[in-house]
Length: 306
Image 1 (cartoon, rainbow, N blue to C red):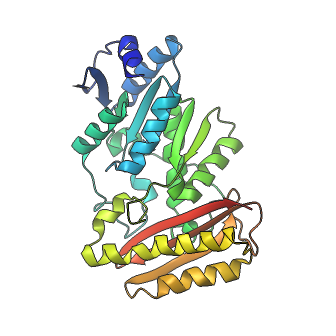
Image 2: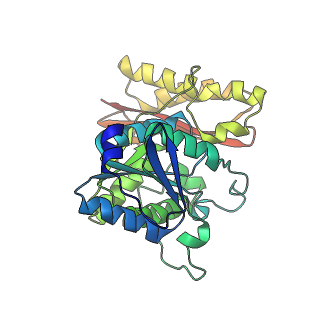
Image 3: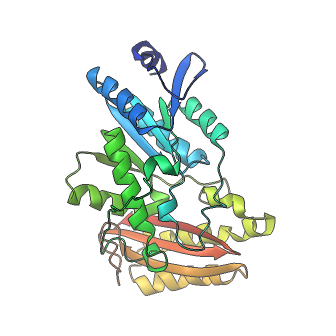
């Protein structure tokens, strides 16, 4: 795969940076026009393009998305952009971790071809006033306490789709509601893009990998394991035949509430595609949670077909 990529590359004049590892070139730019120029050349060559949208501070979960994109496409673009319009008032925009040098290394190692790393001013003009806003799918779960979040997500992802024009775009299941929202946006707006959902990647002790895990001190990191313990317990109950949502969710909440540092935002069972609440597990079921460990809000979930 790498050899084929190298053989098919061409030099795109004007790119902000070109780096090499093991003979493989990877380009880096913060400019929309340069991304479009490169993608148009790939298209001229008849190549397929995959997009992995991220907010940077990449970890093994992101790498799993890039790995799959590399396996399924001729060229891969990784967007590395902390999107300001998906953060609400008093959320962690300024504190959100950033490390573009580490991100470059991970992307090179995974075989990405281009990093799009724009400044907010490149994505949003001073008089920017056009947004993509969704109803229903975005209103439950995280949407209850973060009412402007998915408006920002849909807007930036829509922009990235128009900039990169990918054949496929890759999102992690850890953000299960986001995945459902993006799929609905693509369907409703007739976007010719395949949305690929990828499994949650966990630490050895079960904690779902997240850039926000870096906020946790040692005690909070141990406490955060209540999320995965609750997820695994609820999943086991459903595998053993339990279908009543209240029964499953009450047991999951008990596990979380036993941890003094944990504060539940929500623990709910919904249809995985519509995000409508379920009284009984039926069809493609999402059981999801958001929990504060100290001041850090973490999410986790499992999806099961029953």
